[in-house]
Length: 144
View 1 (cartoon, rainbow, N blue to C red):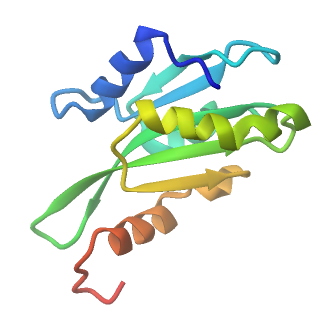
View 2 (view 1 turned 120 degrees about the horizontal axis):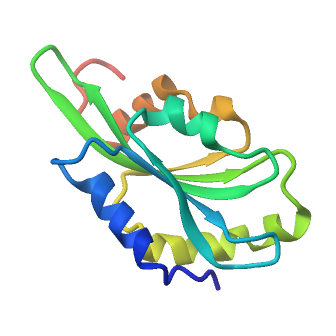
């Protein structure tokens, strides 16, 4: 089991979800290579582009992101995504625990529209994610 007992995790989660906050992502990393304790290592206001720069190639991490996009000229929507990052240099034993730990993370970072598994930074480009969010959102009148 992953240890998500740090109260800063819930604080960061509530901050990302808040309409009054500009914070739109949080990043959870393992305390150390041998630890199953997750901690908030970064938060930010720069969206997916900023998050991509924060990810470590040798790490497995979890991110929670608020994505804002337009459906048409008059409306904007906000949806949340859960990112499960496994960097290209992540150790085998850490990779083996990810599926079990992801279930634990989902108990804490509960409300999201889609889960995005990412192995490369290009997996976190905004346009393809917005397309998935539109499809997950139900009615789409622009053929997407």
